[in-house]
Length: 303
Ligand SMILES: [Zn+2]
Image (cartoon, rainbow, N blue to C red; front, top):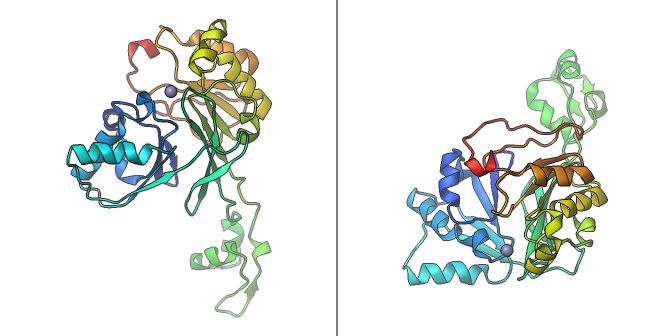
């Protein structure tokens, strides 16, 4: 789940998604869009139930579902056979895989642009990249206060307007404005074999989520099943010059995850485990390992 300006964006919906959302007290009515990477069950079986529950609990705001071709048919077929009518509109955006290494527009709101790119899995699979749009410059409230500027003028100044105060004095934007905060970005890659072209698509992102299903000693199995190793996730993060790497989608064969984390960190030190219930803030110092802001009871295999 990505949260930006209190709006929520869900990335994939495996079975049980709605129960996990309840468990972690996520305010689901703020969900604006769902992004599906591919149509394997562990990424999509949770969606029909989640949509139905949102309707039962009274949602009326439209929701966008973005995914590879087939996502619309998958949902509509289930709803048709089960005679399900949602109380809110579903808008589908079906996206064919862009050519390797290229980004294509996937979604946009006032603050964010989301693009998609192609991954390499056993079926068509999309990665997503969230980029903040350029922000307005920061206003120095102390300087503005000293000049006697009322708060209702702040926004006009931030937008670059020169203003005239009640006493006739004129204030130019450069007198009170500083540099805007840099835009941050988040890229999401699952499920995929190691694909060098992805480096271009996720280049310089503040945080990269990359699957790390296996340890590198299982490379052959990773290649056969269309997955990556923790070592490869680290390699990709290194090559793309990202700020921080989150690894996830671990094979159930690993009772503890430390070896996967160690393997990725040996290549790319700024790596963390994307475990259920963990919250990561962007931005943070690239040298610091983000810590969960809330601790939940993790299932025993994740402790
Ligand atoms: Zn898959």
